[in-house]
Every structure is written in structure tokens, then in C-alpha cells.
Length: 106
Image (cartoon, rainbow, N blue to C red; front, side, top):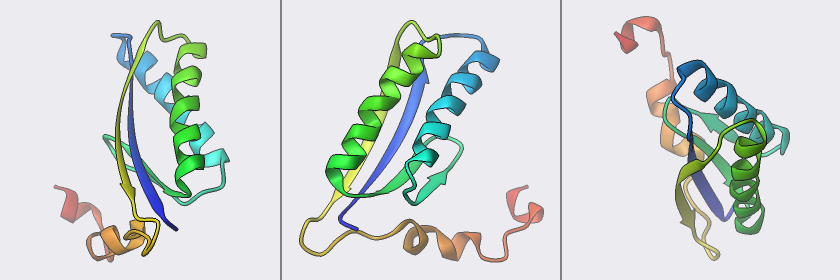
């Protein structure tokens, strides 16, 4: 795996339920691509090849518009290392998620 992308999609709507519905459509699309994905409260991280990840980012814009957003802003983080690869989602998060329970989130 040579790249990791984190995307935060912000539909140009104000209703909180609409925001969630549109973002959920983007997340469903991302998950349907069959890549390693980690959904967090502010962004979704995806691992794969750079060209495929960039295409997913691009399609999320169209999905948000098609879902009813009049506009969309997205914040993107890209980690790319064509020679040595990048740290995986698991390498970044496992130590924090191991044995996770509700008490840790209070």
C-alpha cells in the first residue's frame, strides 16, 4: 500500500439530518470500493493506490451533489510514499483501539 487519504466531506446544507444523510451516502460509496477504510467522527481514511484514492475523492464530490447538496467542500489529507509505502490505518490506531470500551470515551 503506497498511499492513504483522509477525506472530510462537508455538504453545503445546514440541516444536521441532511448533512448526515449526504455524508452517509459518500461513506457507503467509499466502503463499496473494497479498500481498507476507517470511519471516524470528522473524516474517513482510505488505503490504496494513489490514482484510485484520488478517483474516490473526486466521486465523493459528485455523490454529495447528486444527493442534494447545492455545493460541497472537502478537506483532503494525502500520505504518499511510492518507494516504502505508508503507515497503515492499523499501525496508526490499534494501540488506541485495543480493549476499547465506553469508559475510555467519557
